[in-house]
Length: 99
Image (cartoon, rainbow, N blue to C red; front, side):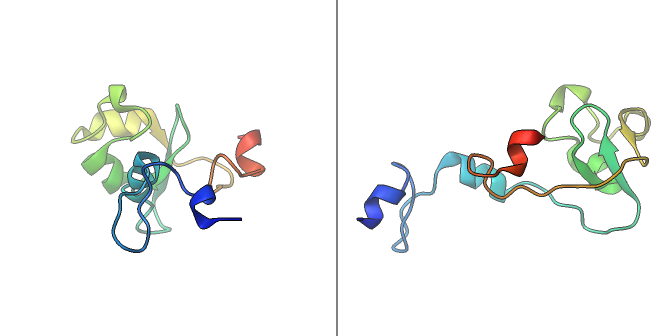
């Protein structure tokens, strides 16, 4: 099987070509910077610190306008949640099918 068969049309190889837009977007996603003080968005469930919600808002729910609004972050997030899941490849992940 040729290596080119496993690549996306706009994916970069080791020589510096472009990655798929989806991969580039995921690489920019913010992950929690601390395990203390985590909060979850009450609409989509993304987990970040309160400071990250204040700085960036929720990437999945931009219409909630949490960035820079402390009161809105408190209204739209919660510190009471159970468990967490990290998905590396949503298209191939068995776990992602059940989320």
